[in-house]
Picture (cartoon, rainbow, N blue to C red):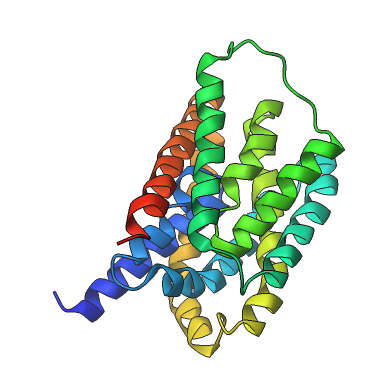
Length: 250
């Protein structure tokens, strides 16, 4: 198999998983960049996939146009926008390795806390102080390394939302985050005509992934859905910690 063929196979798989995450399966979206990074550098992979995220976002926005939590979005949209602005302003001095480690520790600490916590604990309602704090961190980490999900989930998972409302709120929020990131990414030279060409080639795959992801989300039992989200958060967090401590140092 030629290296070019391998790249396109991995790119198609990454696009499908990104699309599936926008359809409501956030547990698979985090695999997109690592899979494509098997063929190219992680930084290049993240930049190449940004247009694919945006294309599949459009499908997610349509699918979840009536299934989302308004209060959470009202809190998190300004917070994540602030986080993106901080990421842009500090891009030249921010250590991606340190951010990756921070996100991994945040996600893993939530899972450890969940393990020792009673499953019958009452849902924790949305509130402005926590939402602004975790939303700002989510926007910052999403800008720096496409890892906004763990901080976001730290805030939203304890609310125990209906699975479709959780999926819709996640999809809509990160669709807006990706759009906001366009201008600073372009200014930093990470978004160009080559990315647009690749996005056009991968769009049908990403759209198919989004539609399949939406269908699977709608039929999965709620308990299984959240166990999958939590398991994926644990795996991704451990992977991020490993990358920050070992791969970055290699």
